[in-house]
Every structure is written in C-alpha cells, then in structure tokens.
Length: 151
Length: 151
Image (cartoon, rainbow over all chains, first blue to last red; front, side, top):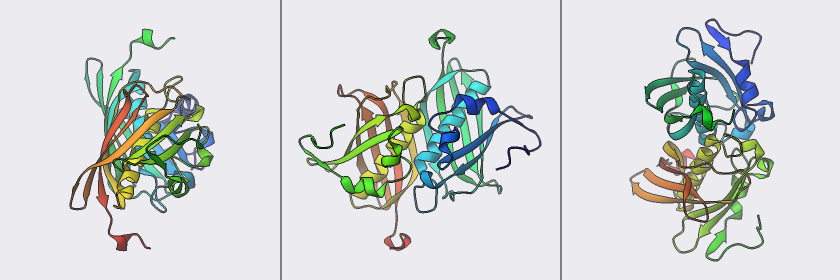
C-alpha cells in the first residue's frame, strides 16, 4: 500500500478514516481489513483500495464473505454521505463471485444509483485489476433528518 | 455471558468456536463480537447468543450493519455445515430492522430452509428476548464436493 502515490483522477478521502475507527476500517484493523478511500474526480463515486489480512480469513487463504459484505455495506453508506445524504442502511444484497485471496489489493467502487424521496439505492463492487468482480452488492439506505443526528 | 449455564433445549457447539478463529467469532474478537453457538435440540437449528462490543460500533451506541451482516452470513453458513452440507456462500440478503445496542445480548437463529441439488437456501435472524428482529437475512449457499475440500 502506497498512500504517498494516489492514482490519477482520485482524491484521497483521509477524513473518512477518521470517521470510521470502528468495525471495518481504522488502524486497529491492520491484520483484518486495510482500506484507503478516495473520491473519483470524474463522477464523485467512492473508490477504495482494500486488502484483507489473516484475521479476515473465511475459506482457506481467502476473505470471509462476511468481511466482504461489511466492506461493501460501509462503502455504500459512505457513498451516500459523500453525495450529501446522511443515511442508515435498510437492506443490502451481496453476491459472492469468486474467492478474494488474502493480501491481494482489491479495488472497491460504490455509488448512488437512484434517489426516491428519502430512499437511496446504491451499488458497490469489489474487483480485481482485470475488472472481474470478487463480490458485488446493492443496497437501500434511508436518508436521516438532520434533526435525528443530534448535531 | 454465562457459558456455564446453557439454556434448556440447547446443546453448546464448542467445536464451532475452534473452527472459527477468524473474522466473526474467536477470542481475539472480545471487544468486537462475542458469540456462543448452540444446536437447538428440537429442530437442529443453529442458535447463538451474541454481543457486539465497542469495536463493532456503527451508528452511535449500536452495532455496525456490516457486523450484523457478517454474523448472519457466518451463522447461515454454519447452519448448512451443521446439517451435513459443506458450503460456500453465493448470495446473501440482509434487512436491518432496528438498532441493536452495543453490549446487549441478542439471540441468533439460523436454519436451512430448502435444498435443491447443490443449492442450499437459508434464513437467519438476530432478535431480542421479545422476539422482535434487529436484523434478518436469507442466503443461497452452494454445496461443495468433498473432493474440493482438500481433505
């Protein structure tokens, strides 16, 4: 992982790492899940670089399906917030396409697909450099009233 | 948590804790997710007692949706194995019904709903003593050939 060399067209979202010191990202998760988040300049999508470590093992040598689901859920939620919509998750669906080897740096994309009143529909993918998905998800998130946030 | 006093009609599955020293359960997760698994005598369903700790926080004071999804995924997979079917996950759906407070001991149930060739359909619920769901899931798992297991 080379945080000093962000890729072209991606703006690092260092703030999100501060927000998310909990289950999915955050430095305490180094042996579990490492994520760097970016905003993709051309369309504002949330983009990430993710490595699953030995403590996120499911099948031998590969990422736990639950760990991939957690990453896709967090990324879809962040994509909503990034688009200016504070949300909570109502429903997610995750499809597992092929094993994601531990230690490999996978690519993550998450974006808002549709907005209907307070209902925000999202999609996310974990894929390789070849573009083929390891797993992909969709979600329905519900926009919060600012008054519910207690801020 | 009182592992010395299992509830009536439940047989502790201590072996599963040995199998799953990884992402969801296992002693290294004490501040994150604590699970005790049981087999329910009357129907063979997988039953659990789960507490989410401070490192599994999503919304303030409540479990991360991704953490609940990971637990439901693991429980549905274990329910398949418990029924004699070694599987990998193909697809899961998770619905989030209400916030699950950190520290509260929730109940977990997972069971095989249907089997069609190698396709195993499952369901799982995280709920309170009042029977109301915090989150619930369904899944499609694919039975492995024993020859694929490398054992």
